[in-house]
Length: 406
Image: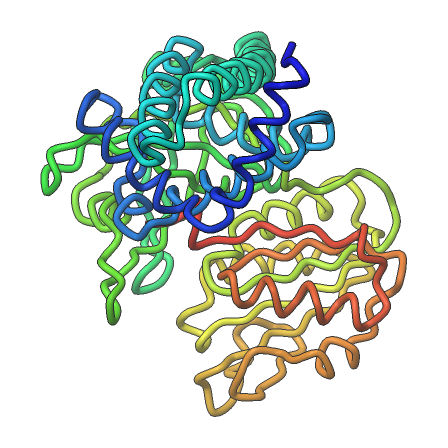
């Protein structure tokens, strides 16, 4: 329990965290990964190189300091962070290592301003946060381990089938190497895979959505987009490695399915909106509706470059054909005309749908909306559906490009 004085000291650091939080967390990661290089096999080196993890940690530390008197308001964020931690294998024993380097970083970056009293306050605050995260993560690990066909941590899977879907998307069908069954999962959830990448001499984890609905107790499917280098963005280490080097018969480590972005049960209208590889969790939702509630009203919206770029198109077409009340609009941004192969009501505008285009599709106000794709698409679609009259609380999203792909 933090004392009133410790809370006062934590709150006094808020201006510094607002102004220099990223500088602090950048120093922290450099210090920690230099002092404990084994942790480089846990953290996404691509996100480290692009500064994504440093920015995310800085935002989390600031939010914690701002709510230090009532950390319960952060429980939603804590669950999200804990879920991500579980998927890469972070355990209770890692927290003392993180704490040691975080406190040392605060002291070294702040210099004379970091009094012993301030460091003691942050030590108490970090201990409180660590206990919260460890408790939530322990519950997730336990739930995963006790599920039918479930497990905790990493489990070896064999690539049973490798299918090229588009020029830059390949699906991998994964079966447990131990011949056991796989658990059921909620449509929209994801797994992590872990593989050795020779080019960086590291084991690297990455998260990929399960790209079909649950039902097959023998295999999981992920569909991986190869991320090519563009401008100042480097090529995706793991996606390129998987495309080039992971073949049928090979083994890869997989975490148990998890995630907070999943289809809700019910019979109210649903809007499924995706762009590019964001189709993967959306397809799982579409298939689940087709199998369980085919009378449910569905509006399906997808954005791709052209018909050849429409990953998992045949699966989408099959699921839509089973629905009794479905409408579909596919926006092809680089096609002169729709070739008809998607069998949807295609809309060709030469760009992503804007707010007017979404409004014209007339989504119902009580629709549950699920949006997945690049960050810019997600931001625009969330705003567009809200402007079209959908209740804000019903709009959920999963942004690719910061947590799932590279």
